[in-house]
Length: 141
Image: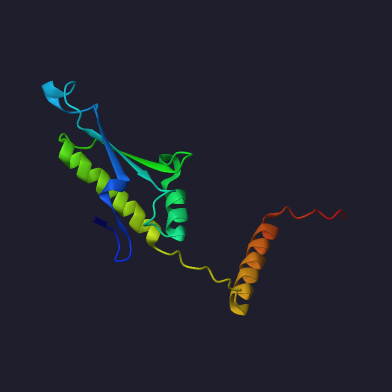
């Protein structure tokens, strides 16, 4: 079991890990060893995720989620398979933790009377500056 929050736990059987060849550092073994990890997690069919967390997770995942609702995380930062595996799981946990946070509700506020007066005063000052820049029309005597 992977503990994400006190209320959310994910069974390791819900996560599918595939090991693929990674580009980048690795020296002589770079074309022989599959060190990169591709983590797949079925968000839409996960029974341990509450509905609101699932919706926020789908929104947060963006392009990393497929049309079928499967989240794909690629980890190829490290040279070893185990560190990449742990990195992918940590990134999944952080993403779910972020989705578990309920967003603050925005309260509509109205501008105060003093702020309205300040705004109008600055507009008036600015218009005076611009009015003073204009050419003074010549009077024909």
